[in-house]
Length: 203
Image (cartoon, rainbow, N blue to C red; front, side, top):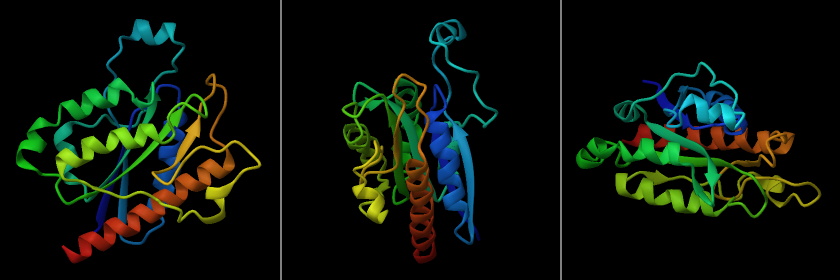
């Protein structure tokens, strides 16, 4: 039986989606792991999104809360808003009360990845404050620690991410994830998938 890893994200301008795609490649590189990308529902009206110059959403399917229970491992990605997860993702998690009551996600591994606007914008506070959501569901938080090696100590260029998970900086929206940020995202996917596979094998 394959280990199912779901990568669930919200992306307004595409930065988190780029990380998600790279994480998927990393996770899919682990033998016996099936990976699927999902988006959470948008909560803003089209008119508001238009004023914010947000591009149209991709054709990645929209997940419903109950579909989370199908996965053996979950990776959650979102942009930050004032150092915490974007409201769209929080609204999705707020709708998981049924899963919480029955603790259907308890014991499953979960990881976090993110995008912030600036270097002081929440590369650590965003995943740190998101852990509360995992705790109430009994999910097992899987950080990447310093397993990315020398890339964790990069000082010559601006680099997103932290021991909590892969990350990028959006800046004014024009900056795209760099090569090293995408490498870290690939690493997170591969590292997480191996752990999810191991946990399923011992269940």
